[in-house]
Figure (tube, helix red, strand yellow):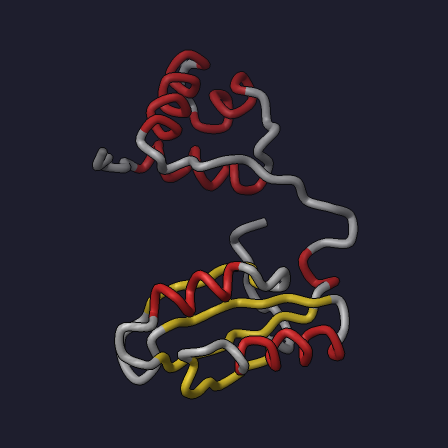
Length: 146
């Protein structure tokens, strides 16, 4: 179901991204709308799949992991098999198809460089992977997910 977001929806999503446990009454006060409006919009956004779930922020935060973006070239017609194999790698955080020289972009995270290196080695060994380029994340300047 396609949904059109207005300014209130975007403000609501931003507030929930900062604190998914914020009570509807507080969200309503911040947005300048009725509590029932907030609840109806949350319900609509959940039903439409815009809100897919809620998360927990830990005290150690996202910076506790060493993250890398892995750009992956795949043999023709092997993307689905490579994507399935990548999903079995515990360090995989997200996977996206891309256009251009690389077919897939994966974000991986590990608590130390040795585990990150091991994950990269496992990615390189997947049948159908013909090349990859790794970009290790050094510092986060803006993170709107938290």
